[in-house]
Image 1 (spheres, rainbow, N blue to C red):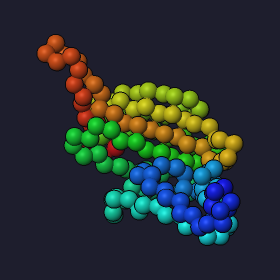
Image 2 (cartoon, rainbow, N blue to C red; image 1 turned 135 degrees about the horizontal axis):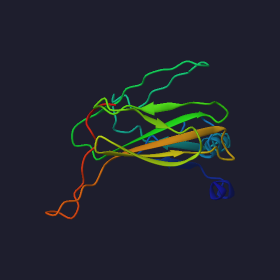
Image 3 (cartoon, rainbow, N blue to C red; image 1 turned 90 degrees about the vertical axis):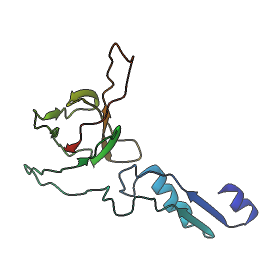
Image 4 (tube, rainbow, N blue to C red; image 1 turned 135 degrees about the vertical axis):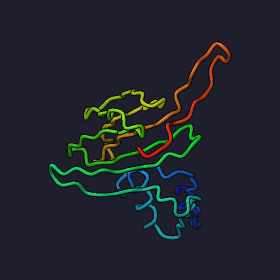
Length: 167
């Protein structure tokens, strides 16, 4: 941007990130920066639209006090990893659990910031309950499902898959 202004030349900012990460609230540091530079004039911002088509990779909703909601996601066979990001206002309290497809006991996620590790149905769940940054009032809860590595005498280590089915 500094060179564009110094030389009085137009600029194109390319945002081909290749992911859908973030709260999509318009309040992150990157989003507010892009808002501010777009008003300088002679600035074009281009971003890739992705290859996800109609895969329905996002869900959104509003919960009222003491309301609960069931949200399902399906994991197909032979998936090695899956990441989920939940975003909430920092001051809102939320409690949730994850029910493995086998119907075994739900995994109750602690509602305090920190890192947590769980295992269910041959799947490892890594949970990071984040804190807001100085640039956003939103709090991220990041969940990664991984096929749990197995070890046997025949093979030192093989990678397993996430338990398939509706979680």
